[in-house]
Length: 548
Image (cartoon, rainbow, N blue to C red):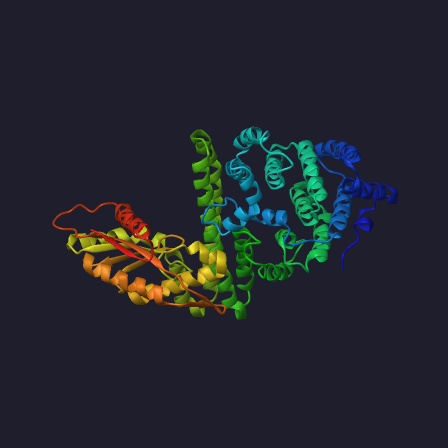
């Protein structure tokens, strides 16, 4: 049952009424009166934030302000599929690249801009760069780019304007410029409200509250979140996920683990594109640790740890994509400086990986009856791609060169083949990522059945597999790859009563290792196979090209 913020606060009724009127007035007033109210709010708030210890009355007043605003906004009809609301969900997954799951949706949402002026494509790229700078914490680069873009972005370009102002909000937060941040946020919130988008307005207001560390420590924060969650939890949407996840993040004194498990169970029902990989990793990692304390739920604990590992891998992928995007769109000097911030994120993610692995191992040790079987699984987790069941890049980097050296010493021919699913992005776009993952898993099973145990199969990239065939000449390699290509072409994959057909392109390079030929770097052989794959794609896809 929702708690009454006003009765908790101990503020005088007339002061509560004044604050509530101020909160509602910001949304209800015309432009001139609104500006007056915003200035009044800034005058009230800014000086108090300079105090070392914030008074209880001030914290209570902030709580009443947000509670009134949340109640007022959420009383309006919410449209879950509003275009700006969908765009805000996409921002949670930047950068948007051509192979991203959100690429087609982003292009569709921004189509009116792109059709109007081709320059908007470059502007969106620059705004992505700005947002990423602000996200990784490179405030200097972000501020320089914000100054450059300020003349190019205006409120008429609503999507771009929101993205631009959210980035500036992060910059002002990092610099401690509270007054500029409040003025910018209220300008942005009221503009979005005036556009008739209450769901996006609520998103921005909750973002604002989430960004106040001094308020998070107050007794009102959890109550505000809980009250808002009760109002909106019937909808499986971005705002519900955001508020539920924020409740989940509260410390154990405020939200005990049993209650966190209830939030976890609610949140994992959401489509995975609503929450990002970092949030999903955190949820599953918590569940794995929590369930490990119950002997009868041991298998559920293992499943949660595996899920956390999957989303942790997605976090690594996104960080790599951010690094690649910065390299492609930044000036060399800015890129070099920004790498310090990216490296810090890599270190934090590495620590999370170690923490996750340690927790997993401790869980296994507690269940000593299955220790032998599950220790093997710990090793497999580090060397095996969890989705396809094939070896991963770590296995390739650490183990393949010694095997190649042995083959070269015995002058055994080795063929390197890269198998790539043709236009795999269309599978994800048409049938969803769960279907795409099913295809990759099924393809991994087909590969295991189609090649010898002595051959090495590696999931090399998103939809690419590397197959290394030992003691195999080019002719035999071509026959084996052609046979596999036909199997894929002829198979109908069935997922959730939908029939999906795919094709693959295969490029192969064969090395005979005659005499005392010096063994080259592994990347050389893979690059040669990659060139052959390009030839197969160039020939019209669904074909095999072997290069000798």
